Length: 170
Image 1 (cartoon, one colour):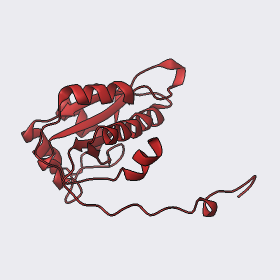
Image 2 (tube, helix red, strand yellow; image 1 turned 120 degrees about the vertical axis):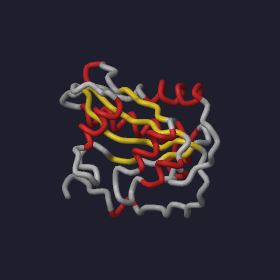
Image 3 (cartoon, helix red, strand yellow; image 1 turned 90 degrees about the vertical axis):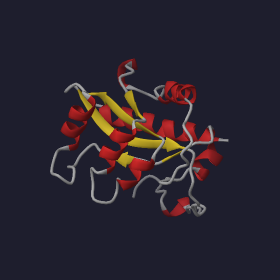
């Protein structure tokens, strides 16, 4: 089952206007935080964005890459307490979230906002802190659009792992 989910999951950028049930999102997120973390902490947090004005504003962050955000039914922002392993912990939660969403018949994509600047030159971290009132001790990793996909994507091609696997040395 997991192998099928991994094989089927693709980044989707067009979604139906159908609202995603909050209970379904909460269930997905309750499992997404269960990945391995340093010292047993569970510092990954999420912001669910459904407000059309905020989605419109987020869609204008970049010239092209974020334009589709304005048409999303929902978007999950992943953040974590600033610590040595914050990126790894938030990344695991993001991967789990995407696979769990796929299992529930939902589609996602990944928008990296850890480093970089908006088209207006504002640092991503500061942009999100202002827009969502995020404390300075939290770092933002990504935005994950979530909804019912309305896009045809081509099937994933198999990867010959033998060309990527090295035994004992490179």
